[in-house]
Image 1 (tube, rainbow, N blue to C red):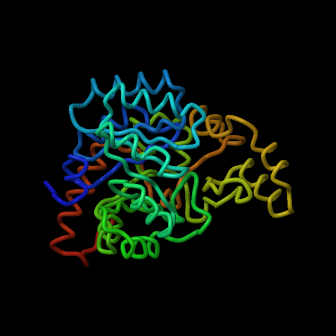
Image 2: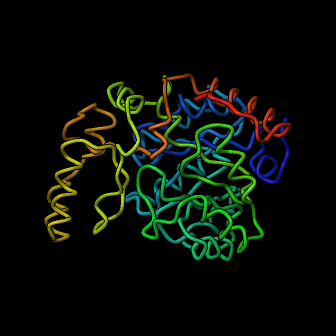
Length: 318
């Protein structure tokens, strides 16, 4: 048992949150992490309302422990999504990609704990002012949609900690006990881990994508499509083509046309490693295997507790 502000706020055993990633974070992954003592999140960003309703139902059947839903606030069916969350009595909501003022008060009136994801100290403070219960500060290393500030986790966490009195969760580049401890020394109360949990049997992502993560090397991801919304992608022909277009001055309209619709689903769920959008963090270069989510949580906490006794000890664990 590890008790601090985040474990107490979320009602969990360990201060480990599994990120609500599109095309990866379904009920199986969320339930596995929650059952292991962390907080599993269902990623609503890749789900139609009826699909989300089904994932919440199955997650409730698979775990008696707390879990949550991650909701990008730019979601087109946002009103319906929020109503489903209340209807299904989801206790925790992580919001992202939008103004936290829009939904935080409404959700909290319904007894829901609200956490918002940011990429800067400025927006972290806005979350606190909006009444959020905690903040996730996500550094430049993270996979998927990223902040325009390009601030690394090492710099972001202490900067945000200076601004906040509410609990702080670190994200970006965290995959093991050592990276977890480092961010907590910098001021985080807990960590949100994404990429490491994609490389699990429980993640809904395509096996070809999981294998590509395991094979990834240093430098195999890049922050791209900055004229639209910055996103960190694994190198493939599509990513290189759109990056070249951006370097050569392609307009926003041209980039949108190249991106098209459903590109992330094409890659991460359907397994098109050539033309799909493959969102993953820099830490993919350090992930050496596909391992059950519960085992990942157990290993991180075992080694974390060892590090608390010997923080300068050396470990080669992945």
